[in-house]
Every structure is written in C-alpha cells, then in structure tokens.
Length: 137
Image (cartoon, rainbow, N blue to C red):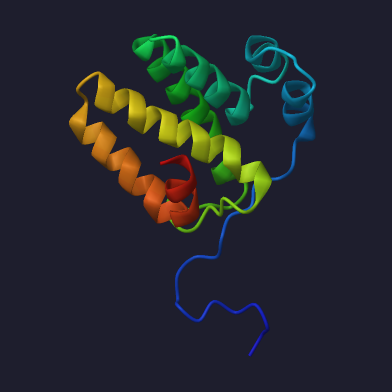
C-alpha cells in the first residue's frame, strides 16, 4: 500500500500551482484593481475586489467580482486535474483565492435573493474545504 493512498475512495485533493505575484502585490499594498488588471486569472484578486465592494455596500458589484474569481478558479482547478468534485484544501495557500471567491459568491447571492445559488455555493465550499467554510464563516 502506498503511503499516500486514499483509503476513502474519493478523488485526491487538488492543489493549485503557486502564483505568488498577486499575493505579493496585495501584501505590498497594491490595490486589488491593479492586481486584477495585471493578473486577470487570479481568483485571489477578484475575491479581494468582491470583499471590498461588499464592505462598501456594493452587493451587485461584489457578486460580479466573485463570479469572475469563481470561474477563473474553476478554470485553474480543471487545468490541475480536478474533475468537478473532491477536496480543495484551504491549507494549501494557492487554493485560497478560489475558496474566497466561492465564499464571496455565496454571500452576495444570498444578499440579492438568489437562494438556490447561495445554497449551492455554500455546500460546494463545505464539500471542497470544511476548514475554509469554518474560517470564512
């Protein structure tokens, strides 16, 4: 038996490749707008834009940013071998942009009355990473 064999029979965790550029720019004080413009495939930048819009009361804007980050994240997950389900661990930092965008999409969907999308995204977050669901609320 291999040391890392999955005994539960589910798909292995998906770990997105590290892309430190967006993270470093945000940590260095660059605006999320500038980061998204330079790294449009970065779910982290779009999730940050979604959070900023939500905090200032722009729920529809937050929804749009979150949806962009979510779809960019799905693209990245598929390129990394994800087959539409399975763990996307919060503990792997490069996964956090996608998970944050998914959470932001659920939050904004709830606010605009998209209950079915809120439920779907909330469950997707819990199924992908229970620890992300706990950390993000």
